[in-house]
Image (tube, rainbow, N blue to C red; front, side):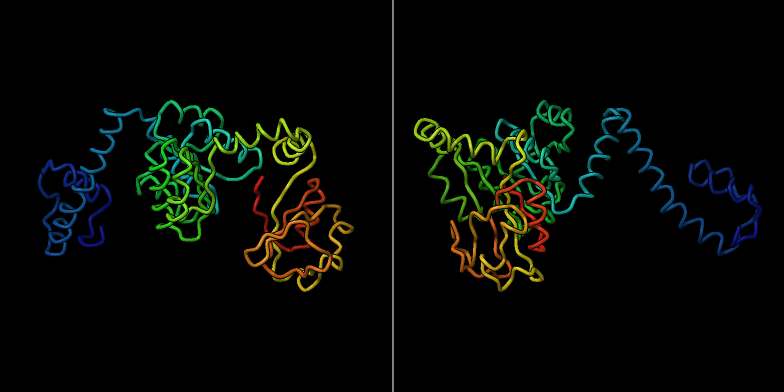
Length: 312
């Protein structure tokens, strides 16, 4: 229409016959500009049309269209995540991690190779990405590059170590927590870049011993860290640079009076100070371990003028 000044119907007819490779002939004689445009249309337009038709045929013949478009929606949802958590493995450990994240409203995506476990995760309303978590392609699809943390909960220590290396290569700032079946793997995982390595057997043994020797202590920790039935939580609060607490000591800040929550420990300069003394001066970037109800913890966050990294 622009180059040859044909009417709409003649131009549409010529375009369709060209893309369909039918070749009825020219409706009107073409000039030089029209011939050049037609050649470009054949080279690019026909190729694009064949690609689209082939892709659609593959969806219809080799796959369930609902599954295909469902996965596209899943990838779109994952693509919108930012500062989220990635849970690698949906076994017994991964299921508990995902359940805790869900209860705390922490955004996360589960990466699992087993199709049955993927369906289990989806049935619970979780974002579940099917794939091998040890491959760079799968981790890239989970957007590890902009994730806040990754939990390596596979039963194989070598796989968890490999995931740690790959994740740190994509995102140097990501927090990596690994499950270690063999206590001897802890040093290797830490060298690979893991921040925390947890052995379920060691933790289980310590908790069983505590249940015998100090049952009330264990009950309190369970209430403070895991039970949704009690309005009591342990949280990690980071003091912001603009906080009024900066430059004040614990006594002057009077966190207990202003919020009702208790400061149990302070991580200052990489050193964890438990039962901090009243003359401890707060600094920007200090991590506070605080115990209190939800509303009390909210007041502490306001005092600290900071984001919260939930560790419960």
